[in-house]
Amino acid sequence: DDAELLKARLSGLKSFTAAFSQTVKDEQGTAVHEAQGAITMTRPNKLRWETAMPDETSLIADGESVWHVDFFVEQVTVMSQQQAIENNPMVLLTSNSEAIWQQYSITQVDDNAFNVSPLSGNGQIRTLTVQFDEAGLAGLVMLDSQQQQSVIQFTGRKFNAVISPEQFSVAVPDGFMLDDQRS
Amino acid sequence: CAARLPQPEGQIDLPEQLAKLRQISTWEISGKLAIKHPDQSLSANLRWQTQQPDFEFRLSNFLGITLVDMQNTRDGAVLEADGETYTDPSASLLLYQMTGWDIPVNQLLSWIKGVPKTGDIYQLDEHGLVSELKPACQQCAGWIVSYGRYQQVDDVWLPHALTLTNPLQPDHSIKIRIYKWTLN
Image (cartoon, rainbow over all chains, first blue to last red; front, side, top):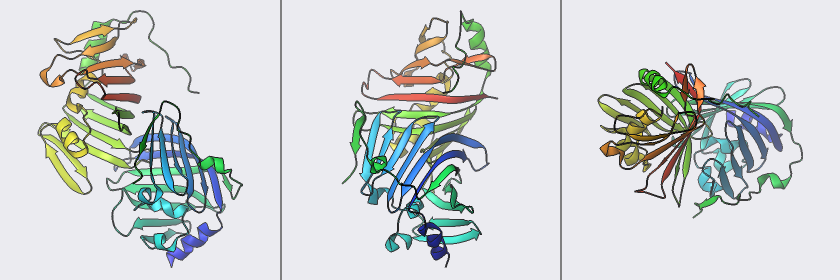
């Protein structure tokens, strides 16, 4: 079924690094926000998502916790990864867990794209579209309940390169507030 | 990094600038908004479209997912969240009831351009642009607005950074960074 096809497309992916450009469009298609940054991911369960433009913010999932470093308010928020990934289809990019995959409906929409939606119908992301090209993972589109679309294109992609563990460790910048939401 | 945008030089003719700004009732800003508390701060991407008095005030997270989408018309504010629709005559009150975020949205509508109203006390920077505003209206409840990063948009100078502080709530402040102004 389509889930197995998506799993197969992702199975060869041990690690992934790329630059991204992001355009957020509202339901009329007008641009709401534009950003650029970089993504680093190792399967399973590790992800670093860093925006550089127009402002600095980074999200690091280290396998146990998810750290959000917000330079605008000088705060680091940390929550358990379990809590953070609830109903978030992005988790399928890094998770091999059968139990997690079964929480999502997956449909192949064309040769190179799959739509992923939480079966529970909850969560901020209604549908995540995972896009591939002949080289591999190529882009993501997140659709939310207001029909706002966050379109992400990857460039300068590297597949299965060696990733240093440093990429997923977080030092709280001095002077930043730590908001620890782990139960 | 981004080239330094031209800064105001010399003295700006404030009355003329304010007269032009008062004409502008249709504008759009995209930027970032933060609410700072001692225990927990929040920041979100802001998109604010206005055709006064109507406006749409949308906050999204850095992944591009909507956190709050509020519409305001003469008949009051409407906010959609998790498939439910909520209304209140005051946008500020509705936002506070729904999210706990205390943002004086209605008053901010007139402060955002840096245009003082009669009775407001304000200070000017070295170029003659409003650097700080102490609004006089009753519901303004002690807010102080400071302005920065003035840049020219069409033929007016507009602030691209605002900070709202309130002596009545010393540990609560609001920071707004505007990346782009679009006028009518």
